[in-house]
Image (cartoon, rainbow, N blue to C red; front, side, top):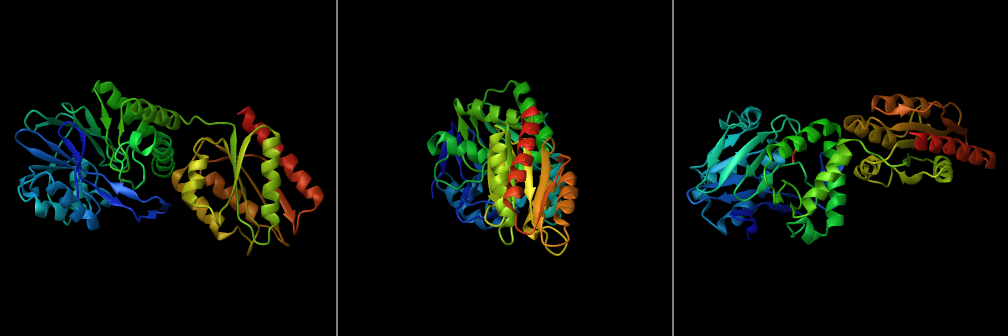
Length: 396
Ligand code: FEO
C-alpha cells in the first residue's frame, strides 16, 4: 500500500471502497473513497480525518509506507459522519500519543458517537504549528453536518474541506486532471445534487468564507474522490457557484412509473411535446433508473413532470419512494406537473400533487389523466399539454 503525495509535505493516505453501491440511499455505481491526509512538519505530523471503520487497516498500511503510525502527533476530525470518523478509535489505538481535535460541535459529536470519547476543540482562531507547516481551521456548519470543518495548510497551499468538492468515485487517480476533468465534474454534480442540494445556502457561504480569507490554494483535497489543482480549482468553484445560486437551463425531466404501459406511452408524448416547445427534455422510468441519477438530472432543470398510474387508489410505490427522496433534497424553485392513467377511480395524480408541493415544487395548474389505454386523441392532447408546460419552462 502506498501513500500518494498530493502537495509539498502532504500525502493522501485514505482508502478506496471499490464495492460501495449505496451511500444512505444514494446509489454509487462507481464506489467511493474515504480520503485522509498526512501533513508532515519538521517536528510533528498530523492526520487529517480517518476512514470508515472497516478500512482502517488500509489507512494504517498507507501511513506505514512513509512513517510509523505510532509517531503521529495529531488527528484532525473534520466531520463526525461515520465514513470519516467511524474508524477513529481504531486509528487512535495505532497512534496512542496523538492529540485529537475537532470543531466545538465535532467535540460533542465524537463523544456521542464514541461513547463519551473526549477530544479537544479548535476554532478559526487556532493555528497548530507542526514545524514549518501550520494548520488552520474553519468550522463550516451544515457542509455537511453541524460539526463539519475545513482544514488548511498555508505552507502547502492546500485546503482539506472534507465533503465539500467531493465525489463518490473509486479510482487509483488522485487528481481530477488524472481521472479526466469531465468525469470528475459530472461526479461533482451527482454528489452535489444528492448530498449538498438542500444545503446550498451554507455551501455558498462556505465558499465565500474561504475566498474572503485570501488563502492561496493550489490544491483542494476533499474527503471523497479526486482532488482539484491548477485551473481545475476555478472550474469546480464555478460549478458550485452555479448550483448554489440555483442557475438552471430550459430543461424538463419526465419521470414515470407504469403498470401496463399506458403511463409510459403518455410519457413518450409528453417528452415530444416538451421538445416541440424548444425545451431540453429527458425521460426516466423509476423502475429502472437510479434515484441518484434522477436527482442529478434535476439539478439544472426548471421542471419535473411526474407520471404514475393509479394502483389501490394511489401512486406506484417507486414514484412515492422518489418523492420521499426529493422531499429530503427539497429542490425548490422548480415547476412540476403530474400525469397518469387509471382504470376506474383515480387517486395517483392527487397524491403526486400533494407530495410534489411538500418537496418544494411549484405546481402548474393543469394535470393530465387518461382512463385505461390512451387513444390517439389522448396522446395528441398529452403533447399539447406538454407544449404548454414547455412554454411555462421557457417563460421562467
Ligand atoms: Fe462524507 Fe458527510 O460524510
